[in-house]
Length: 254
Image (cartoon, rainbow, N blue to C red; front, side):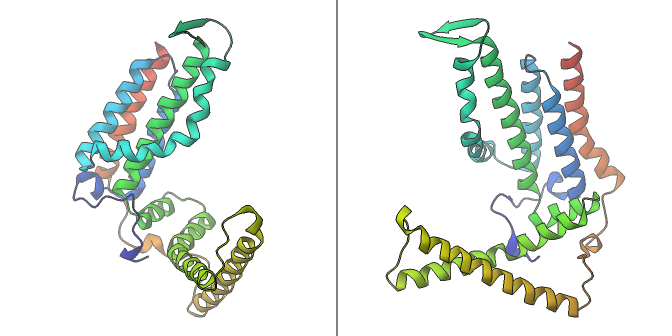
């Protein structure tokens, strides 16, 4: 898990947020998202409060708000269907610019858009302040099932290798005058995918045997890489879910 495997989402900064142990950031992000999801959709002010929390954390971490906004556009393909809810919903309707829209559908659109966007921004902040290797380390310290962390570790470690292998295979195809890109050429594409799978499987077998010969027993000692989070780090990270929990509680009781 060398430095060459950093992710494009990670933003290298020397900030208090970057310095926190990964497990406390993961826990804070998950609890923040739970508070957002638990908030009634009618409590519009609460979502403004959550956004303010994200902005404060982003400023402390030194991550530009424009960068966050641009990368959050990744959610658009997944929420486009929500824009149909105002027109498909039932019940009370309102009219705007000649369009008849359902009130319940508008609330549904707002619910998906607001909560989805806040969840994406929270995830982007986590990814922007934590390297992929540290994310796996944090999950391991939080007692995530070993099988999941090991699969993710190997996937991250060899993703670049498989991508390079795929590029070499595609260059070899094109150098021989074959470039399958259309539906009627799906056989060639499927053959390439199958060949890549076989190469990956064979390489995985060789790597596994090499690791076993060196004492691998089913667990990579990620947890040995440095000490865990201190009480001060847990307290600092807890400020985010505590504020979010307070907002959600007021919204639910209101």
